[in-house]
Length: 192
Image (cartoon, rainbow, N blue to C red; front, top):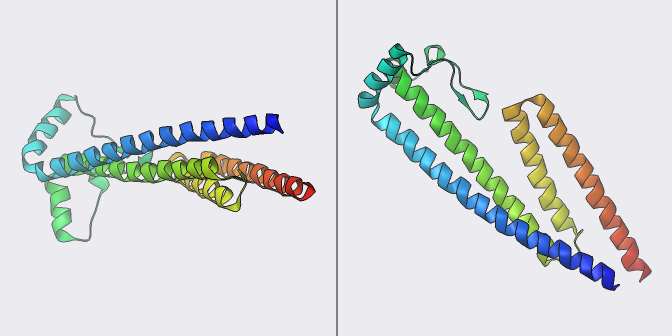
């Protein structure tokens, strides 16, 4: 029994460290999100001043207009963008460089919001494991499963089908292991 208590203490210590690291990552992603949102809004708000400078950089070849990517989501070329809202289409036509950069930066802010939510869910899962008497409770399994499904969906949307499917398979394997651990724990408790 003493050896099992030592293992449980190590798991709880690891979960405490994981919770701290997850909270730090959550704070970093929130700061990055705020900075990205402020930068995107600032670029869009000062589009009249920044557009000539960006156009000059494109002409000099120092800035590749090309396609803008934000977290592997292809936003396409600014010339391909179209809006049914006349005022927005006017902005796209007059300030294509400023609009595309501010849109890319705001997409990055959105991606960082998702990352912050994921790190907070991971932190909560670690906290639940750390505080629970039974490490394989339904509550812990549910939180871990939510985080992994969410991560798999994000992988599928941003990095492609292959990594999304791999994330889904990993989610299934982790769920199976946790469910097996829960079953063994119930059998052990019934035996005692």
